[in-house]
Image (tube, rainbow, N blue to C red; front, side, top):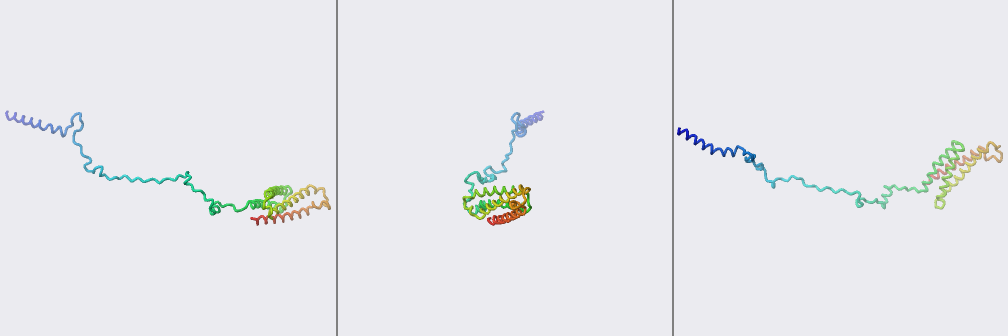
Length: 215
């Protein structure tokens, strides 16, 4: 009986001594969360100061040009002859020559009308347009050095001749039914009109050649 009591006393002492260690290492304390020891996560890594800085070096951006700025816009070298002659391709033809060239297609049309024996109305309409163009040309250069050019005088002479032939054809068409082609009516004779038209055609051809040579 004594041995049994002694065993119980020793067992009680052992339980009392082992209980705090068990509660400290393995059991959570109610209301205080986990009370165990947390592992040191940084024990295998160097300190922040020893960490390699992998941040790329900042690159300064290339400044963009302000094309709206007057300092960035270079003026055109208009004083440079190579720029004027090559880039701008200035028209070296004078205004007078340009005006002469405008008469060439008009005269070519009148020339073709004579060849094709166009009726009086069509022929006179084209001659009238030629006459008005020459009058403008005459007034434009009347008091200028160009008025002494052969081409200037030739156009004025041709205009006078073409107007006289146009008037002749109009009168011939008007009076032919009443004329006997005697001495007074000879100028309206069809043969005479064809002859006069031939002279005008030759004069137009020579004038066209002269105008082309003036370029």
